Image (cartoon, rainbow, N blue to C red):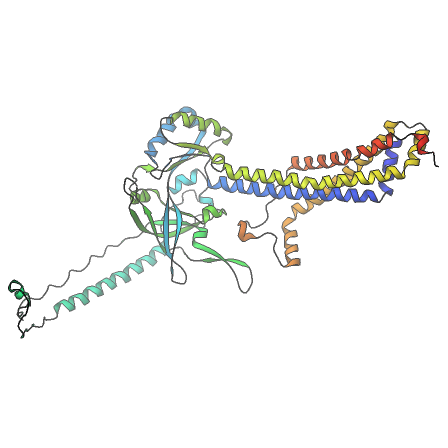
Length: 504
């Protein structure tokens, strides 16, 4: 009992102990904040990646894709085991291309993109599409149909173009109806062969004139719709007045874009077509928002000469925990075909593993902060043992055992670790739950934002507090405080009472 009484007294009266408590507190708080932010970024990234990818992907290994995707879906559905685990499937055709459009300043711009041919309703059923659309957000049956207001604009443009072609034709007719002036050649044709002199002969004024050109038939055509990535159509710039990062727009709904790609087969040939922008795709993933353009699947197949061919089949599962068995079943079903079958985590494996490795290394490095607090505990306890040599001698002379003396200092280190970890947890969780307010306060104080939204495309700093991680950090802090108090405790326990009281 006396051990706990002395520990509590030392904890209240020894001000050096507060330095140890503060060291442990700051270390624990830092680890909790950093771990929560890293978990937040990791969780946010995984959520975003999964939201734009299906659970399982069947894909070809070349730009030519694979043949008969509809037949393959029917084969999958005929397998009772696979059919029971699959909720929906969608066919896509993806290729590289160049998109050309007219910017707001009337200049033409060209940039590389990934053109993805889809069936919007089927693509929505596998997830990761309609919830990211601007105009058709969360619709169960999005489409590439051109809205009436955009169609009206195109009709007016068609009328203007038709009127211009008719004007050109009338001018050509007037020019053709003008009489031909007779050509009079008075000088002899020197050096001209006889068989060619008839070309330069005097023309008859009564000869029939050249018939007027026939009018060029005007074929009314409405280009197909396209859904472009938000960052393909928009750009970020700093407003000179407010100094805030804002979005500018180069491609508006109803604008025309030209997509140029290549055909398949032995000889690649460039092909192109115009499309009308009907919607934006914004997933908050710059890899997709800045590179993807979605167009009707059948139109892209026809444009590239890939009828009844596709590059991938996207699959949504009823229970993602069964993904491994589904992948194995699909691999067995298509074992004689050159197809890649992966889960979304396997496709994004390098990125996800890189984040986990970075988080692990960062946690190890930051855990050294608590180790520094441990060395502080070691130094302070050594000083306490030196100062309390007389007290230790008296306790031993009164019958205290070496184990009892050691328990005093071990309990003291344990209390320092517990109190420091407790206050560190409170501080760390408070900062984590209000981290965006803290970031705004620092930005107002320093005039510089710690978190740049234009870099990460997140509206705010994501956080995810892991209970197991918080408990692990606390246990580690208490363990370090206790371990670093062992050496001073052993030194105190080994003191002989006679030697301790010799000079008293």
